[in-house]
Length: 62
Image 1 (cartoon, rainbow, N blue to C red):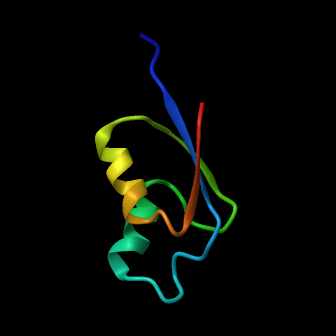
Image 2: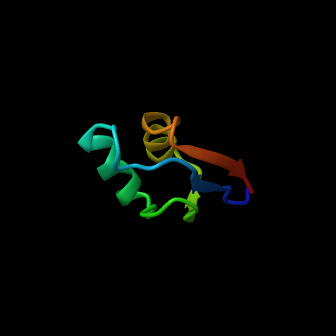
C-alpha cells in the first residue's frame, strides 16, 4: 500500500480573529503565510489538525 499524502494550502489568515490554538495548529502544519502549501501524510492526527482549521485551509489528496 502506497503512503497517501495531503496537500494543505492556507487560504485565510491564521492571525486575525481566530483562536490562538488554531494559529498554533497552522504553524505546526508548516503554514505561516497565506498561500503556503504543506505536503503532509494522510493519518488520523493530521486529519484532526485539518478539521480544527478547516475554515482556513484547502485540502487536496495526492
